[in-house]
Length: 111
Image (cartoon, rainbow, N blue to C red; front, top):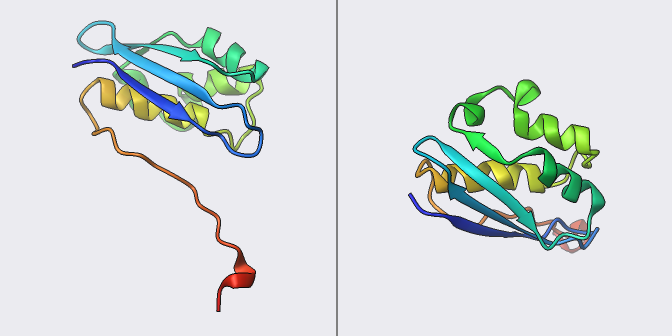
């Protein structure tokens, strides 16, 4: 297992960030969120630090990552919390580092 870095472009807010996830043991990951000007993401970053393998399988409504995002006041559609989950999975060897995106299509141009 080795550390991973994910750059997140959250969209219209323009508050890009950099998520660093590195193994902190056999079954946990240390998370650092850097380079975000969003005060909510900064607060979120301070609420999560070490994420365990078990944390990645806790249901959404009880998950410590999403609980911290809610406590920090992150917008419901903010992609940063789910990016943290994916970075943890990659750092633990549970997923491959593959880009993800949400792309909107202008309906007026669609036949």
